[in-house]
Length: 99
Ligand SMILES: [Ca+2]
Image (tube, rainbow, N blue to C red; front, side):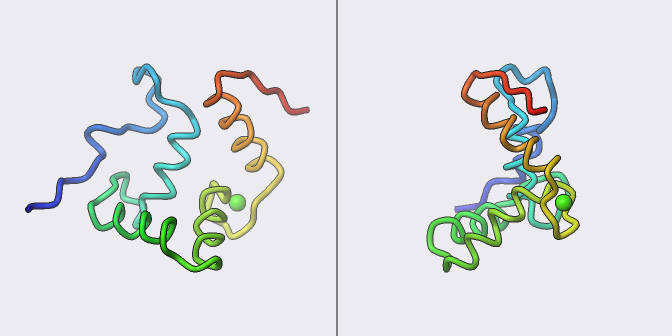
């Protein structure tokens, strides 16, 4: 069985024309895109799913940190946390305004 190609042609984060796309999907996409090339390869998918499902606590926490560290600078700022929380609210169909 040949692994499927990158998901970039089917999943385009941040594109408003995708009716049910959310900002949270964009953030998750970035966390799956291990080499940051704008596409999720089959290897990226397997590696990430393996980490999430079968990784150690440290590996799972490291992946979660990567999800929240939106600019990849090694720190989660208040702004990044607010963006994630807002995107989760958006995902749930709720508006969230953080002051
Ligand atoms: Ca950051």
